Every structure is written in C-alpha cells, then in structure tokens.
Image (cartoon, rainbow over all chains, first blue to last red; front, top):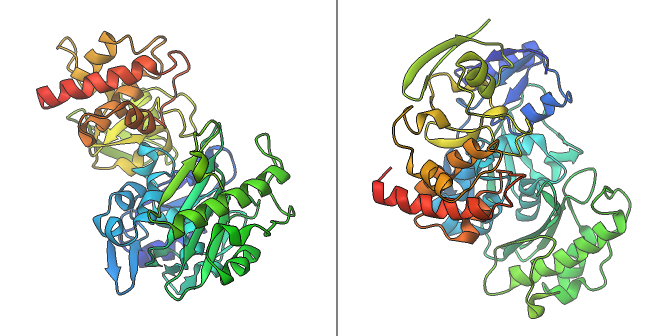
Length: 285
Length: 159
C-alpha cells in the first residue's frame, strides 16, 4: 500500500474542505477502503478520518428510524430502538461480516462503498430509505448508481439514513461458501402505503437493484405464489467460481419467494442460508 | 512522520509511524508484541484480533493512527508473564484447542469478548461468533469446547 497523509478533522466542514482541496478519500470504519487500498484499488495521497465528526445516534423520527452514518454495525445490531421498531434491519446488520468487523464498519462507509454483495444497499432499496449527505437528501433508488459507485461527489459526506418503519419486511440471503458474503440476498418489503418492494444484492455486477418485474407481480397480491411467473433476466448477472448466471437467477427467484413468504407471515425477519442448510419441507418455496 | 500514542496492555506507549502503518504492524514491529499475528491480511482470518477500547477488532485493517489515545489489549495483556494464565487461555490449553497455534491469539481475544457478551454461550452461538476466526488445523471442535469452558470459568472468576 502506498503511503498517504492521514487527517483527523474536528468538524464536518473541515473534513469536506480537506476532501475537496486535497482530493482525499474519506475514511470511516475502513473495513472496505483499507482492504481495497491493500489490493491497490485505490492509492489516495491523503485520507480524511471522519469517524469523529459524523453523527452516530439511532432514533425514531415519526414513522421512520434515523441512523447516524457513524453508527457501527455492532451498534445498529444491538440498538433497542431498532429492535423495537424495525427489527429486520437490526437482524440484517447483525449478519454483516463478523463480530470484529461489525465493531469497525459503519452505515455511512458501507453505503458509500456500495459493494456489489452488500446487505445494507438491499435494505435501503427495499425499505425506501432516504440517504442524507452534507449537501442533500437522496432517495436510495437514486443513490446507488453502479458497481461500487454512488451519486456522492467530491467532499460530499454521508451523515445518515432514514428508514421508514414497516412490519412486513424480510431478508433472505444465501452465503458464498468461502467468503460468507451474500452470493444472493433478497429483501422483500411491503411499505406502509401498500406498495411492494423487492431488492436484490449479490447478483448483478452493478450492485443491488430493485427487481421491477417482481414488484409488479406482487402488486396484485403480496404472496410467494404471486412470483411464480417472474423471471430475472440473465443480463448483467455476476458469474464466478461459485455460481453461473443461470444459478444466480434461479437463486434470486427462490430467495424472493422465501422473503415474501417470511415478510407476509407471522414472524418476519432475516434468514441466512448456505450450502447444507437444513430447510423444513413446508418452508421450502 | 506522524506520531501516535496509545495505551497498550496498560502501558502508555508512543511511536513514530507512517500514515499507512496498520495497528498490527505497530504492535509487532514497533512494540515487539509479536503474539498478535497476521494471517490473511484481508480482514477475514482473525489472527490479528486485539481489543481496542474493550472491543475486538482486526488490527490488520485499522491504522495505528486511528488508535490515537485508545486503550489496546493484546494477547500479552491477558496475563502477566509468569503469572497464571487467563481463564480463557487455560481453557484452550486444557481442551487442546490449538495445533500450530497461529490463529490462537486471535481466537482467544475473540473468545474473551464472546464470554463477556453472552452468558453461557451454546455451541451454535460460539460457532456463529467465531465466523471471523479461521483455523486450518483443528477443525474447530476443540476450540468450540474451549470457548464454552473458558466462558464458564470467566463467569466464576469475574474476569
């Protein structure tokens, strides 16, 4: 890794200024950025550590829960506010990485990194989150724009996100057998206005996306059977050692039906599957 | 070059580092605390886990400069040299929870945290919580036994 100048600003304004003036990269928990720098994917001349200047509170605001960008995954997973009002999100975050990674990784860093197999982007898309930056508020559907890309501009810092509360939401992911990130993850939710949303992660090289055909199919009835005719196009799907495009597309369909069944059922939440998972026959979709 | 100061195993330390110096390199090469290991260097294997302000973190993926003013505990800080082992270390020895020993310091540091967070962790919990610690020798079975026994011993000795 090339050396760089490390800055620890004492205010958001100072952080923005440093990022603009020096073309610095912003460092939050570093669980994605530092690894990418080791791999030579980025070689910034300077890093601006924003962990001390972004908010990290988690609080209920009207019909939503707002999470500060600096909240670590461990803090989000154990938040009493989230456990009470949006437990599916706390559960999803409790399955990101591992306990040591969750003590470092943050909401803001994860959203800005937009890793193609990230869990948070799927949650943001399916729950209809609003992402707040130092300059504006952006709907999640506008925020993520491609492989590890977002609309963030130089010096623009994520300060938090607001997630509308719904009790009808579930996330089902199937783990990569080696690295244990989502080989495919599907988040299904029924918003409070009755509109269904289905977000998929780990499947496309361009990152998490909303599966429009599935959402249309669920418009009539939010049931797993409603998805029986929905087929995901193979175009743009990831292909690697572990899954070709056809298998990934198949997984998306299976996991989407399971996520909808879970979200519509008596105990919505998160299910993590892997090779060898034992599934009760009646739960198989 | 920038300076960093922190507390490591209760001792105030200070050193000159580069921006890119990872905490694990500062510990091993700056302070000669070589009990903390680098396995994968990509945040997956957990051999480098230390406690920073009481929480387990992967020291290969945090900058030394990010630990300015922090309170760091490494495997060397669990029990003084020559003193009786920490209950979790003793449990690892008792249950033969290591073969080559490369992953062990990270395993023990993670296990101490598991025991602090979860009262009487069961096997499934221990296996889930050890997701970020990789061992290529043991097959994990004895490690899981050791973590359970160590957690019980810690509850008794209030460590």
